[in-house]
Each structure stands twice: as C-alpha cells, then as structure tokens.
Length: 163
Image (cartoon, rainbow, N blue to C red; front, top):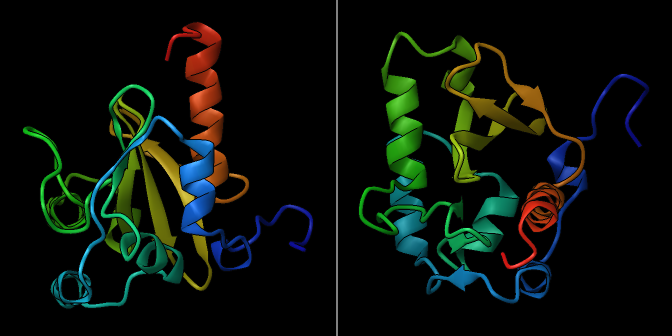
C-alpha cells in the first residue's frame, strides 16, 4: 500500500484484458497488436512500454469507450480518421517545446472524447495522469487505468443513460 500522500504505482494495480471486456461490453475493440508492432513503437520511443500496456495491446490494439472516444489508442496505427496512435501522440507531445516538460517522460494512452487525455508517467514508478492541453499541470489519478475508464463511463452514464 502507498504511504500517505503518495499514490500507488500502476505496477501494483495490474488488471487483465478480460476485465476491460467485461467492463465495456459495448466497447469497440480492435484486433490484437502484433509483437512486431509493439517492438517498433518501443524502438521509436527509446524505451519499453509499461507492462500493463503491453498486456492490453497483445489482446486488443486499442478500444473505443461509450462515446466512440479512443479510451486506449491503437499502439501504432491510426484508429479512425482524424485520430492518432500511442506512438503519434507521444512523439507529438515530446517533440514540441511549448508543451510541459513532464510530457518528455510520459506515454499517451487514450482520451475521453472531450480533450482530456490519459498518460502513463514513466518516472521511478509508473503513475497514471489526466491532462488537458489547456492546463500546465497534470492530475495524478487514483487507481488503475481500468478504474479511470470505468469512472469516465459512469460519468457519461450519469449525464446520458443511453451511452
């Protein structure tokens, strides 16, 4: 358990791909990513992807949540027209000087469809953060990536039960 004032590392909050399928029965899941595609992304980024992401990508190469937003970006390929991948977004945010410095040590994971994105921050411990490009600072998220996705789904359902 994390000490007071310190969030738990994502490494201690692992979940299985089937948990995502169960939580998002109406989600749109892409075919699994290949090990070669994951290796290509890792080489392009200069580091390995977090274990949780590798596990998910080997089961499905991204998925769309309740509003059609890419809750998990495809690892390499673009999902839908106008959308990006983990690689393209991560390289974009790392490649522009006007973005906050912390993005140099983060991997873009997905978005909620309203401009807010999820990232895994790759420091001494991996942590999940939410960030909107209008903000300078990020917000560290409690729980796992699956917990964040479920919370977002519940928010949408509270506003529109048909989602």
